[in-house]
Structures are given as C-alpha cells and as structure tokens.
Image 1: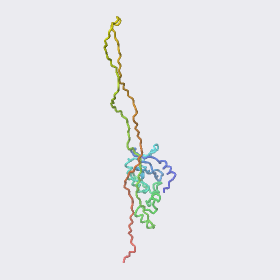
Image 2 (image 1 turned 45 degrees about the vertical axis):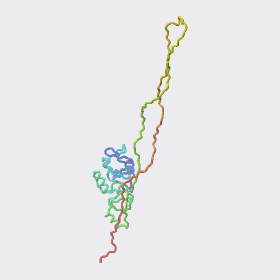
Image 3 (image 1 turned 60 degrees about the vertical axis):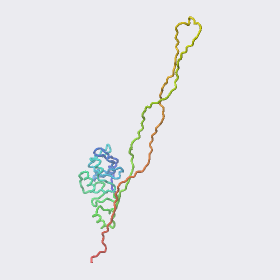
Image 4 (image 1 turned 90 degrees about the vertical axis):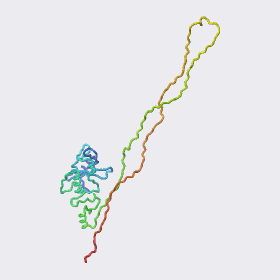
Length: 279
C-alpha cells in the first residue's frame, strides 16, 4: 500500500469533494483519487465516471485549473473526450506505460525521470513494472509479461495468475415521467323549466236596474280597477356538486436489464518433455 505522508493527506482533504467540469462548463464528475509527483504536487486526479460510478478516468493536472473559491476543477477537454479516456480502477495497474497512454491520449508531453512518480509509486516500480500486492490483490510473484514470468519461475516453485471477470450491477434513480394536470373549465348549458304563474282578468257585466235616479247620480264618473299578475323571477347561485381528488401511489415493479460482461479464462498448456533420451 502507498506510504502516504501527512502532507499528502492534507492535499487530499483539500481536493475532496471537488467537482470537475469540462471546457464548456459541463459537469464531468467528482474527484475520487489524487496522485502526487516527487515534489508532493498534484500530478493526476481520478474522476468518478458513469451512472454507478464503478470506474474512474485519470486526468493529468497539466490540463486542469483549480477554482478553490467554487471547489471546482476545470479541464481543457470536453466531457466526451474525458469520458472516453483511459479508464482507471482498483484492478488497473498504474505503470509507466499506462501514464504514457494517458498523456498520449490528451496530446500532452510527459517528462521522464529515473524516479517513481510521486507518492503513488507503490502502485508499481520501475524495475519490474508490476503492481504491488495490496494494489492488485496478487502476490509479489505476479508478473506483467512472459519474460519476467519465466524469470520468476526459475526462482520460485509457484506462479500465480490472477483471473478476473466483470460483474453486472444495477441501481435505480428517480426521473420525471410526466405530470398529471387537473384544470376546471366553464361550460354553458341552457336549461328549461316550467313555472306556474297566476294573473287576474277583468270581465264586464251589464245588469239592467229600475227606479228613479237622483240628481246627484247623474253626471260623469270614472272608476279604476287594478289588475295584477305574477311574473317569473330567475335567480342563479353556485352549488358544489362534486370534488375531484388526485393522489400519487408508489407502485413497485421489476425491470429486466441485460448487458455484456467480460471474464477471463486461463488455459494451461503443458509443453514439458519428461524422460526423453536420444538413442
């Protein structure tokens, strides 16, 4: 495992939680790991990528600008370029060849020295170019190529080859699937109803009488008889008739996801010859 100093821990804490943005301001991810050079200066940052965040990409600090005020790091490449960059996870050896691959991908020039690159030198050494035991999960005798493997076989009775395979993991996240809109509108209908009404009618009847009329009864006279009728008065009032209630229920279901996964298979070919003598 890496022998990390108090200075490394302080720098790591400084960049913990920083958000990485591309050259257009789009969010790439969060700082997941930090690698220092021999001068204890940040040389690479590991950035979590993908929905599940199972792997990281290694970004050289040569192309990064730190914005301490906003706890952000801005890189000079676009998000798609960084996304397709060399992947890095706990199963990947950080070798000089891998560093060269990273610099070549981003078109950067890397200065070469005879020393290990900073405090992450524990991931590999320059003599064997193999990962350490804690980093790769293999023993010290694990080799990175056929040549070094043959040399180890001569010195050791056991050769261990690590086999890996990918495991499919799935998670969930919430997303907006639409909205239910409820609105009221006013519709005008014409209603018809019959209302009983009453009115007065005047009838005139002439009845003959007999006898003498006095002088006072002779003359002009006028009598007014009022006639009434009922008229229909219409009034409207708002009456609550119905209440619409909308509620959300959580319904659980199962979805099937399919994805290709890779796994390593180890074939052992015995090419030894025993007990063969030329006659």
